Image (cartoon, rainbow, N blue to C red):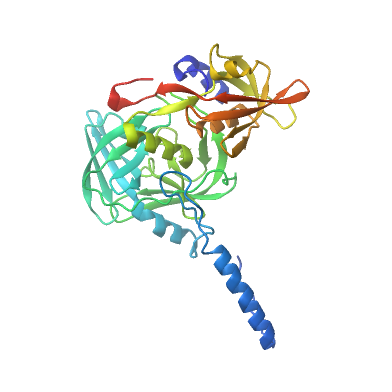
Length: 365
């Protein structure tokens, strides 16, 4: 969403441094009251437990309405069949981590885990070992899609990110070996973390968790309290995960064509710390970029981004990065701006930085 990562790597690096059980009624209860309560409970059960959200992408994304009974053990049991162990062997050695099955023969994992591997194998829960190959890589999000031609994995249940809050309970889940998942409980520590990856690319508003990370977890899943995957754990940035809405978009782009395109606004911004409610204060507007064409000026403070029917509040420059990361190149978007003492909006068509890190096509950043 900013300038191309190769132009602003140094600036980004500098920026980042800145229920109890219910008591039973032992008294005498009238039969009529019992019937009334029974009917009410039945209605609530039907209305809440059996509702499911509509798919929000071309793939099925069905968040659960409540935490599975049985707590985190039930969450692990439900999600583990879609988690695989990944072994990547290169000329410099071997690395082991995990991956998340997005389809029966497709696994999403951390690009830093796979690296320049010449041989990749995946083990599923139960002991089946299969050969895998890289279908495509996006260094900007630290994600790689593996093709497993003989795979028959159950696809992971994907959650949503807009309801995730700091302090929410999460589980970092990997597959230590073919018989034993590795699960580490924690909370969401921070949201919309923007940081440079070791390869020099920029992360898209990562989720940070305080969950302990075992050596076999990177590349695996960050699971929400409803049992759905909310992020893909990075091997390059320990304790951080790519939001699943971003990861799913990268997966779909690689799956359909092998090239990953990222939306671009053409601005540089800093935190508007002296502005009530915060925001992202524009410091530089790229000539001929989407923001320049829409009339965005240096000094403007962006307080929100609307794309489609969704509006994301912006309280910091990192929030602006995260909001744009959830959009698609070419889509229309609206920037909500404070200019001086007044409010205005600027409508623009999101630009395209081009295929970033599409390794299968021989294209670099």
